[in-house]
Image 1 (cartoon, one colour):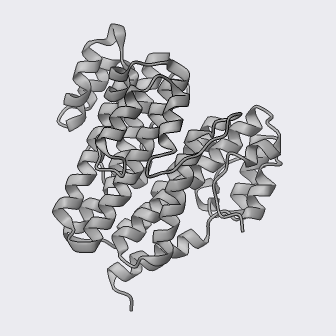
Image 2 (cartoon, helix red, strand yellow):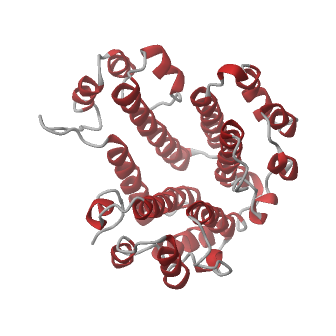
Image 3 (cartoon, helix red, strand yellow):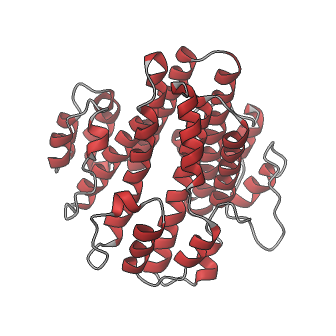
Length: 346
């Protein structure tokens, strides 16, 4: 009989083996409606359990995307059940990220005054783990009510300064503050719970994820918003990444996105571009994260590392599907949708 730690690694790798395959992606990108996509996902993929009660003809895009995201946490829950003792705190970190996603979703609803679809309701599988008052959160319709709903949690204090300045609500700053809290929580948990090689590897995995997210933010702010260095710095999450601090400061102070990319070419990530077209940074960063996670899935045996690697590859699969859904919505050519996807193409 497998030990609990052995069961986590074995089950995570088995679940990874049931990922969407190249042929299925090729089938999905050729569908021309959400109903057709749902039918394939419901009948031919590992999302069947989550979609079993869905009626293909009536589901809309937002509901399908929401259910796909919920399926990730259903799968992670199957792994968390094997964990007990001190390490359980680390495995539950992924579910804390979901709390943050739900809070941000509710803020967007409040700002847009659109409460038509209650997509931020907590699924049953997560109510076992969260300490938030999920019923109260699902009912809030103002920023003040949101703070009340988050009372007795770290989120209330984090969001207070942003919500008190509601006439000039800084959504980007609010998102950055929540993300920084989450990454700090994960880092502290790793520090407390793990030792030796496992601890070092987990820290590297999360630092790389954070650093690549920071790179994406810097590029996006410089390319599309022409933001100041101060504004960009405020959006970043601190981490001990591969890029030296002096190099990062140079990237932040450079004049524009093109100059940033040239500096990035000489960073540890060695991104190179030609004179005609600059690479799509988000895709590049996500590709690195995916392939690093896949390597850990194949070659590591530590349950915590395998769990984290599975989480990252599963998140990528969800993002692939959402890109397909959006592509179908806007009638993007299948060949163009394919260029947005990151998966094993062999």
